[in-house]
Length: 145
Image (cartoon, rainbow, N blue to C red; front, side):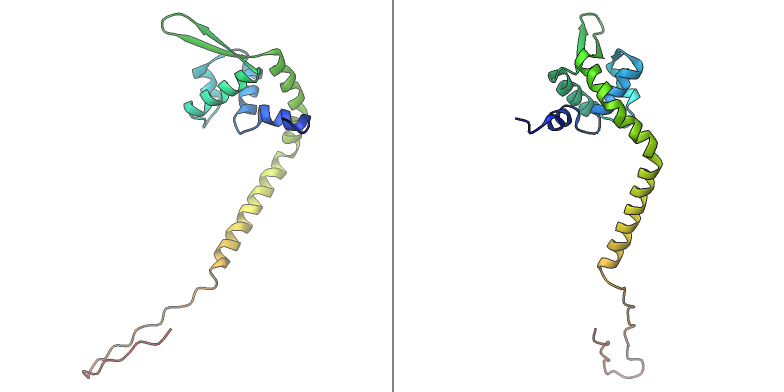
């Protein structure tokens, strides 16, 4: 199924939100769904539910359901999740070290792409005015373009 260990690891932690979910659970410990969602600015409820289900199926996250009114669900990292988080720490340190450079590179690339897009259509030609007949009934044709 997997070509190598990196392939397996990326499958488990791939995507925008899974590493952030691991980070939130590492930083705050066991969290209820609502608190976890507040920790992850920008995630939708649907995406968070989907990511948590995948992480639970992979054995990274534990979901505890309390049978009470109102129902309460808490999420925490499993031992496998803690080991994965430990493996990701050097990656996080690399990101901290090079964050400013990464942001600058992305900004420069976006600016270059915007310039290329504006040049794609070629230079803008000025629109020639249409000549109209003023004193005679003869129609004057506009310039051919």
